Amino acid sequence: MSEYVFKDDFLWGGATAANQFEGGFDEGGRGLNLADVLPGGKERLKLLASSGFDFEMDTEKYSYPNHEGIDFYNRYKEDIALFAEMGFKVFRMSIAWSRIFPKGDEMEPNEEGLAFYDRVFDELAKYDIEPLVTIAHYETPLHLIKEYGGWKNRKLVEFFDRYVEAIFTRYQDKVKYWLTFNEINGATHMPLFGLGFSPESEETRLQESFQGLHHQFVASARAVQKGHEIIPESQIGCMLIYAPVYPFNSNPENVMHARKEADLFNFFCGDVQVRGAYPYFIDRYFEENSIQIEMEDGDLETIKNGTVDFISFSYYMSRTDKKEKSAEETGQGNLIGGVKNPFLEASDWGWEIDPVGLRISLNELYGRYQKPLMIVENGLGAYDKVEEDGSIQDDYRIDYLREHIAEMKEAVKDGVDVIGYTSWGCIDLVSASTGEYSKRYGFIYVDKHDDGSGTMERKKKKSFDWYKKVIESNGEDLK
Image 1 (tube, one colour):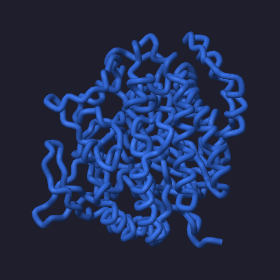
Image 2: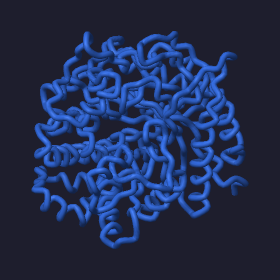
Image 3: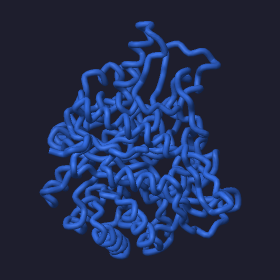
């Protein structure tokens, strides 16, 4: 038996996404994807919430930092060596769909794209770092969006089938751990990110979004079955954005409201992907919102037979909510809504910091599903300053991570089966929500800035050595 709280084979590491750090958007035969037409800056959030986005680039008006990212495409050996120095056991990354199928609907994959990820996986293997690969991470090929309307269109299931078969076949001896769709339950809030379309109107958003989700449920279930067939030892998980929902007070109306919000946001997609069926509570929601899901014969059986092996999730914040909100309270909560929690402080970007909420989340998920859990995103976006001596004293990040890892330990003591932890943005990258470099998460500083300047030089932050110590001690030394 392990002498530690965490198992001896606990997977410590870091997490990234191709569209936010890979760069090389026009190299190696890669096609354009959604991220390539999302401009940098605060206006990105408005675009994500709006209808009628035309998916065209306007380089005279906007900058597009995702095009360059932090140039992992050309610097992957340097970056992986730094991950190895920290002692990573696992590295979460995504494959850019449009690097494998540039348009998304081709019959044959792009060999240059396949070969690039061969090199990345071989480099990780050199340091005994296990890749954890997200198959679809906000990177729908642009052609599939403009020609087919994104995941509203059933044809994307077929194209996704072809994509997963290509990468499972190619990397069957190199990748064991896979995730299907990143933060799949966020799609109804941000359909542009998750489903690759801009809603025709606010009135049609829910119908279009839940139809797109159904197509992703089918595609995910088929991917799980195909993965188990091609890679018998594979472990394939779902990926949720998770935020426990607290009632604003003990008013039973607010308690019931919080429960309904948690069911819809936290558990709907999990129930489908883990339990293999649409949950009981969704029928009433569909009826009250005039949502009708078009299904093909066999869809529900496919979903039933394609349940995931484990659950992964991102955790950044909790959510506090009440049934009746005043005009002043509306929109004053976190990124995903709600109202302000008077007991919590917030980050520079207004995300409320709630370490205990991570323990609550782990207990809620394990209590509901009894499946192994992996935290694949958790971290603090903050402004980092390079001191005159070249150091980056990010004690605030250390404090944030220390408190969250401590609560993860408590959840393990509670009896929760946690198998891994990958801190988000282990190296600085482009923010998904704002397209900024200045919102930094990493243990490794990258000299790149919102105005496009910078050398791309990598620097270790103070948190680099701290996280190295955490991994070496298997989570016992958090000082």
